[in-house]
Amino acid sequence: MEEKSGLVILKRLPDWMKSNMGRRILIAIGLIGILLIGLSSFLSNGTKNRAKQGKSVKTAEEFVVDTEQRLTEIIGSIEGAGDCRVMVTLENSVEYIYAVEQDINTDRQEDSNRISEREDNRESIIIVDTDNGRQGLLVTEIQPTVKGVVVICEGGDQPVVQQRIVNTLTTVLNISSKRVCVTKLSD
Image (cartoon, rainbow, N blue to C red; front, side, top):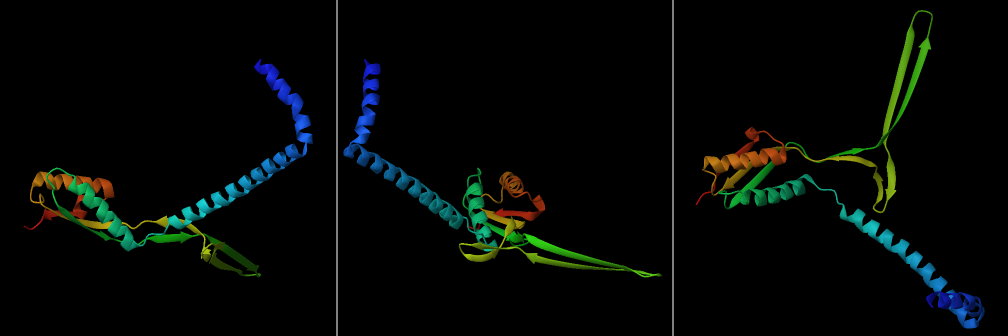
């Protein structure tokens, strides 16, 4: 029965499309399709722009604040540590490496008794147009290196707690234990 009804619809479809109402419906469906395609490209561009704006460059100060907050949470959850304060110091700040264009010219002159060479090097940063204006083409962003960490916590006078904190920090930050100081929080 379903096959017959499907065939009936297919047979009547050309007649339906020839009517004024059928043509109007087909045109409306086509316009709606075009509109949806246009909207989808507009919405995807808006999402990309928001993603670009969301990815902001961190300063060294923001890096320190973020790292201190995260370490305070981690250390505070270590058994016996209790309430704690964390201070992070950095060796360097954030470094940015930009794409460069190199122009190297080499001149070589040979006289009868001597050879003369001259090399002229010129480097310039590649500039691109962005939503925020013209900027250098960023290739790599190198995060700061942690120089040392001071942890002051309630259990900082207990050797077992100190060792747990030192082990945690040396693992998380990839620094030596010489760069970590753990002490007791004053009452």
